[in-house]
Length: 182
Image 1 (cartoon, one colour):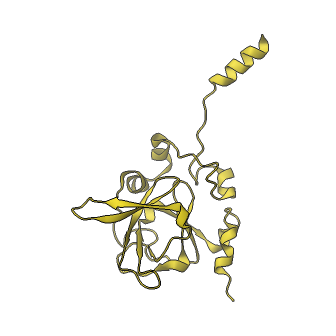
Image 2: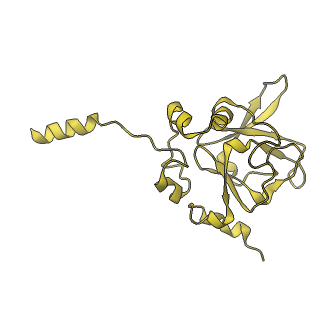
Image 3: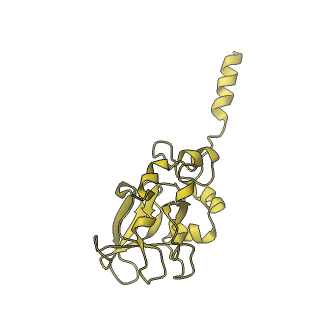
């Protein structure tokens, strides 16, 4: 009987959500895992993201050009989704597009990127979203430099930068070889 009461009480306990990348210390140490990532609720995201991060990632917003965190970042490292921590872009593929937003020639892990047609603003563009968190990141255009000819124009508010020196500590040691000079 006591065993039944204990099991019944355990079933009534609330299920706690897995926090966004920056929220849980254990997830930060592990990097990103699609097997354990669960997108937080809208209420949780409103608590953990800044208003601009929420507007950009959850409401397809755009931050101001030249007034965002990474448009002129020149440090070595990777850029991950601010919601999930999934790896998206590398500083190796970042270039100065003159647009005022961080721009890349290609994604770091193409399997973490999803594109779809965007018909807003009286035009047809290709929206870029993260696969696992479904965060709006920005758009991709066909006016980039070689070798791809693409410009992945991203919102800094959708990204978190992890400097090369913190990759191992933050669970992304597998990307360190990208930054070894021969």
